[in-house]
Each structure stands twice: as C-alpha cells, then as structure tokens.
Amino acid sequence: MIDCKLSLVTRHSAFGLPIDFVALFSSKKIFYALKIIIDYAVKFDYTVSNIGDSDMNQIKPKIEAKLSRQARKTRATRRRLLKAARELFAEKGIDLTTIEDITQRADLAKGTFYYYFEDKNEVISDQIREVLHGLVKTMEERCLAATDLTTLLEFIIQAHIDFFSSRWEDFVLYYQGRADLKLKEGYSGLELPFLEYLESIEGLVDSVVRQRLGKPLLRRIGCAVAGFLSGYYSFAVIASEDDNVDENIQSLKGVLVSSLARFINGALRQEEDSH
Image 1 (cartoon, one colour):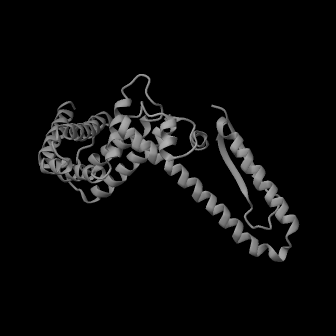
Image 2 (spheres, helix red, strand yellow):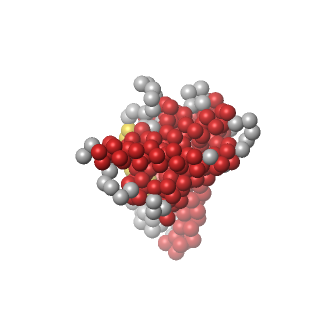
Image 3 (cartoon, one colour):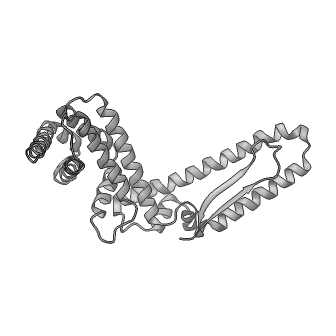
C-alpha cells in the first residue's frame, strides 16, 4: 500500500481557524483527497479576496457549519457501510461477503467504499475491534465491585450475557473472528483486539486472587474463561429449540461459575505446588 500525506494550510488567517486539511490517504483515496483540497483552496481564496474584513464574522459561522455538515455526512456514510457489512457478515459469513455486497446493501456506489476503507480486511478489523472494545468496557464496568473470584466470574458471565443479548450480529462476528485466528491465511489485524480482551480478563482475575500469578498461568486462565463462555454460547444457540438462549445461560450461570472456579483454583494449587 502506498501512503502519502497531504497537507494544506491556507495563507489566510482571517477565518480564525486556520483551515488545516491533514489526512493520510491510501493510493485509492488520493484522487478524492486532491479534489477536496483543490475545491476548498479555490473557495477560500475567492471568498477572502472578495469579502471585506467587516463581513468576516458573518461568513465564519457559515463556513464552520458547512464543514460540520460535511463531517456529519462523512461519518453517516461510513456508518452505513459498517452497518451493512455487519449484517452481511452475520448472514453470509466474512469470507463470502464481498465489497459489492456491502455497497449494494448500503445503497452506495462501489467506489464509495474505497474512500473510507482500503479493503474488506480493514472493515473486518474495525468491526471486531469495536465489538471487543465494547465488550471489554461492559465487562470492566460490571466487575468494579467484585472482591472475590466467585463474584468476579458471575459478573464476567453476566457482562457477556448483557452485551450479546441484543447483539446477535456482534456475537457472530466475534465468533468468526476468533475462528479466523486459527487459519494460516486469515485476515490480518485481528490478533490485537482479542489479546486486549484476554488481557482484560487476566487483569480482572489477578485483581481478586491473593497469590501472585505468573503471566503464563494468567494467560491459561484468560483463555479458559473466554473459551468457556464463547464455546458454550455458540453451542447453546445451535442446540436451543427456542430463542431463549440468554435465559438458558442465566439458569446455568451457577454451574458455569463453579466449573470455572474449580479450574482456576486447581491451576492455582498446581502453581503453588510447583514452587
């Protein structure tokens, strides 16, 4: 990928901004970047040379409003593409979904996609990062009051239930992303958000366990908790004869907590015996 940094600061400071267009664009976005910069440069030069200083205070709010509207439009278009992609990933899977599928679902021209994203890989990475960041935030907020392992595990499980209960598409994406990590030729950039998710679980467990835990043991515990939850949730969806997956998990939460607690306590005892 060829990156170039495009920067323009207008020589006129009367607007009080000054206008600074700085962005990193991929090779596919250079044309759009140049067009925006040239358009704004021409408009600002013409406006400043033909408007007196006494009128600048009236012009400035209009320009700022226009820039604000453009920014909102840009964000809205990007959200449309991400929403379409998330729906399709849940319906067809990340591999079978094409860029054309995404733009058709978003009712946008195919070329619009490349103004916002380099490729489908970038969309997948952005989506999974957003899902896992949201899950981590929910989990850490829920676990603030936990002071012992059993309570902490209850809160972690409840945080996952709360987060995914109304986000089926997010769970499908989470599960597909986790599976993709095992492939030799998977999508790039997915490792970091999953590692941050594991590190969050590890930090929460470490905060309520009295003995000092080594990094390898914490990683085993983090993987066990994450794997236990995602594995059970996914099979519960497959096996459930109704839509009450979250209710079924709620009813078994005590069993999940005790199973995880036994595993962790057993791992802690092995750690103590090895020293």
